[in-house]
Image (cartoon, rainbow, N blue to C red; front, side, top):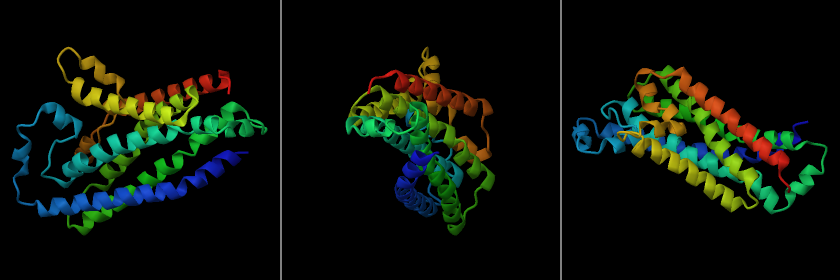
Length: 261
């Protein structure tokens, strides 16, 4: 039981470590950059920027380490970078096996399609957990080493609440992965969908008369900067993301069980 999960999960460990190392290096640079900007009145630089741009990059207060990390690390890396990454990786989860005809061999084993789909997707939890479990302590150590302070519980919440968001992005990729036969198409479609949803929430969602459209984007339900700054968040947002993730999983399962491979 769970042989596929163990195999696929172990294959993703190296990639998860590399991904975490890269994010850690970037976060370390951002913390260092914040320290050399001390005393610079850079808040005025953003006064004339369009509200949509400020919203897109989560810019609220760049004079504190929490606000700076929220804008430069979490809004850029977690919301956009990791969201696109997990959509891309999930897009190739099933479609790559269909394209290489490896799926025929897997389905010849005593395993149902539903179980196979679950185990292959569950393996994606390895990088999701690793990047958050190790990324948080790395960021905290960089902040402390730079002589700054950040609320540990707020940092923990920012990472914990990112998991439902990342699962939704991966769920979008999984839907495309079971719907098409070519991995490249599924990966590009998943990345394009997540990116368009990001643009919709950050650019179009605030337009007068179009406020409703922002609610279709998962980025609407995860705002890391307020969490980092004062620990404020809405539990209903995480609940909505989890419901959306379950819906995407059920849709993927229904498509995969019924399709001819």
